[in-house]
Each structure stands twice: as structure tokens, then as C-alpha cells.
Amino acid sequence: MKRKIRQIRRPLRSIASSRGRSRAPSGPAARVLQILLLFATGPAQASVEEIAVAIKAPKSSTYRYVKILKEAGFVVETGTGHLEVAPLATGLVRNSKLAGKLISIARPVMQRLTQGSRELTLLVKRSGHFGVCIASCESIMPIRYTFEVGTTFPLHLPGALRRSLLAYASEAERELILAEAMRIDPQFRPQRNSLIRELETIRQRGYAESETEITPDLWGISAPIIAGDASNSALVLLAPAYRVSSTEKSRLRSAVRSAAKELSAQLDLTV
Image (cartoon, rainbow, N blue to C red; front, side):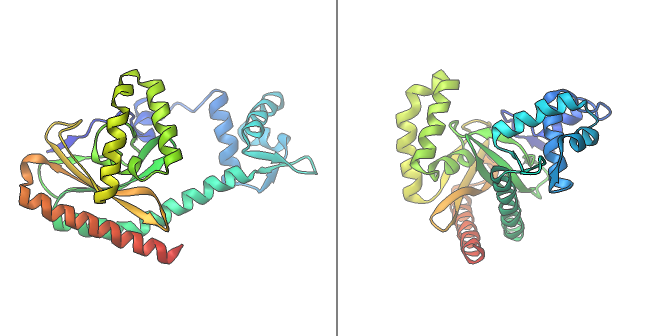
């Protein structure tokens, strides 16, 4: 029996499947994404005419899509009139590769943590004002929670997986995240100062912990994965609260923190 952890946003895979697989993407946004994918999988450079043929769109419309990408800084025009990927998009590719490296390093550590605890282990990463689950290792217990890879979540809400990502963001990043949270969620404003104090406590003790803060009967602990002097990812363990005694919680705190430190050390060696 699985218990789904409810999230603010569903992963893209779920959204796509709910709309039906037979319907092809349409509209300007889909066309812009098609052009980005073209550069990701095709030639290093392409003309507007070549792009129009590849995405099966009129040349006049393709010019508009390309203009959007140029203004956003994703593509630039070469001296020959062709287009190529801009440094901004190259940076996105680099971040994707770094996330892939983190997942490959973390996978055996997560499997070992799940085998030792029998509970759900997650790898989460900060991405802008949100967190995202980039890897999971499911609990081996008959009654368990699940968490889909690709699920995103706002960082200002309660919960161990959110708190560790927010606590270890730089001060400038935290201020931007909290400012955006107050803009989109007016009820959060009175909680801002108490949250800042809580984040300081998390940094001092080295981990975040929560119980039934969003999902009833859910206990969780998360510890930062630190590469160099920065952290934008965390290792998380989630379990039904009724299944973890105070003694077991103490053991799992130690296990998660040790696993996160192991990953941090491995990342330092590969940087």
C-alpha cells in the first residue's frame, strides 16, 4: 500500500500523460521549446530557414520564435547569419551535467541508506525559488510513502526537505526566495522572521527535521550536500511517524547526516 505525498506541482510527466499522449504540442511556447531541442540534438548552428523546415512552421512565425530566444539570451546570431546556442544555454547544459553527476554519485549511497532504514530516500535540489526531486529510492516496506522524481515544491512552506534547501542557500538567494514568497502568498509575511530564526538553527545543528507539518503522520529529516563552500542539494529520508520511535529517529538522524557528509566528500574530490 503506497501513500502519495501531496505536492503543489505535479511532475511534467504526469501533466503530459493526463492530457493524452496522442496530442502533439502546439502553440508558440511549444515551438520555442522545439527550437531549443533542435539545438540540443542537432547541428551547432542553423539558419532560420533550416529551423523553419525542422519544426514544420512558416518562416515568418519562426522569426518570431527565434526573436523570443534571442531576447531571452538563449541563442545568438553568428557573423554568417546563422544561429547558435548562447552562453546562457550552455550554462544550463552544464548544470544538467552536474546534476547527472550528483545523481550517479548519490545513487549507491541512497540505496544503502534505504536498505539500512527500509524507508524512502530522496535527493532534492534547489532550482530558482523552488526545490525539485531529482532522484528517489523507494521504501521496501509494504505501507510506504512515494515521491515522484520531477516533483517541484515551494521552499517557504514547512517540511524538512524544503528547510534544508532554503537554510543553506546564500543570504542573497534566501532574500529573493522569501521576497517572492511574500508576493505570491500574503499569509506568509507574518511568518518570515520566525522562519529566518528557524533556518539559522538548522544551519547550526546541520540538519532539518519535521513531523506532520504538511502531510499527516509523515516524519522527515534532511541534511545538506555541500560541495566546496556551497550547497544547493540535500539528502532526505521520509517515513510514517508511527513507525519511527525516538530511538530510531536518533539512529536515522545520524545515518542521514553521515550519508550527506559522504556525498559531500565525494563531490569535493570530483570538482
